[in-house]
Amino acid sequence: MIRSWKIEWAAFAGGTLAAGILWLFVHAPGFEGQLSTTIGNESPKSEAQSQVQSQAQSQVQSQAKRLSDGPASERLQGGSPSSENPDPGKSDSVSGSLPVTQGLSPLTQGLTPLEPNSRYPEPFVRVYLSESKTVETVSLETYVRGVVAAEMPLDFEPAALEAQALAARTYILRRLMNDDRTGMPVQNADVTDTQTHQAYRSISRMSKLLVQDREGWMKADQACRNTRGLIIAYEGQPIDALYFSTSNGYTENSEDVFPFKLPYLRSVESPWDKEGAPRSKETVEMPLKRFYELLGAKSAQAMGPIVAGAGGGKLPIRVTERSEGQRVKMLAVGTLKLPGTEVRSMLGLRSSSFEWVIKGSKIFITTYGSGHGVGMSQWGAEGMAKAGSTSREIVEHYYPGVNLMEVSKLPNGSTL
Image (cartoon, rainbow, N blue to C red):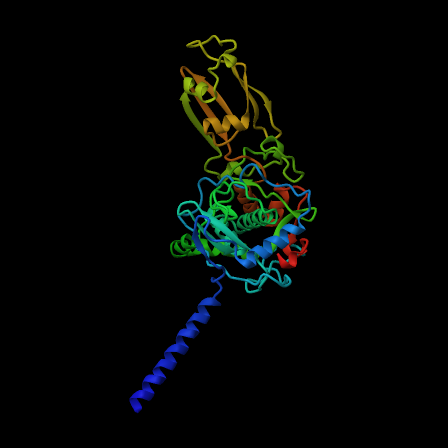
């Protein structure tokens, strides 16, 4: 009888302990997302996600532009510590109002980020993991943390990481609101984990990062917490928050790179990049013959006049037009004229800001900066942060005319 009572008591105590451990795990600060990993197109949207995205889409103004060309980012070269993405997320309610609490960062000046433990109605993001060809479903804030950890070196200044979090959150939220499907290899996901959209560290990779670089993980997490529930807006709508690695000293007007003109994607000065960016300047060389071949300049159309000089047989190469951002807008090779963005792609150059010199049978091309040049320069953001700028000042510099906005202020934002 005594033995039976002891066994029953041990079973009760063990069950209570297990339940307590489970409660602590589920309510821990790091447990922030709901994960569902599936293959290909086998998993439909969750009911909650479908409801959220349907409500959001119905509120989008008809004139909202879709970003149908080009990625949000061209990933920062020289980047973060080995890390992968540790991002447990919190499965928050998808209904209710967006509470505002005391600010955790000086960036907002009148706006305040949400407390980490507050439950605001986050949508879910379905991320296609290109390496495993699976889909990972996580909360919005979990996704943003994974992007910050993938897109920026984690030894960057907190204000730069916060600016990255704001841009990443704004980009994905706009994409969800517009139900933008561009660049997707499968139907049951919203975004890929590559720079086609935004680089993203999966939950498993974030878990590895937490072990390998706890300080870096904490910095990415804090950047998201300090900007929680805030986006970059223009006239009350989330912007196309494009960004890139390194400028040549200026950013580009959107219409000089992409087939659209937006008032907040204007060319601005960015002198900070040259100080710390590892690839602000790079020289590549190739046989001149190969250069001509890659550009298709061996056709009869392009032969044009031959330049006399050392070795002879050289087609003239000249810049016929430059953009406001001091990049090559149009290049002429013989009689062939090519946009600078196409030349960059054809030759595999880091930037369309370049110059060259021909020596014998070789051409040496020097590029300045890295990336498409539109929107926020990541190394420029770091330079501004080191100079004392807040994340708000950073985004307002690179996206002229914008303001920070609480998600709840969007049409029907309380249910987004």
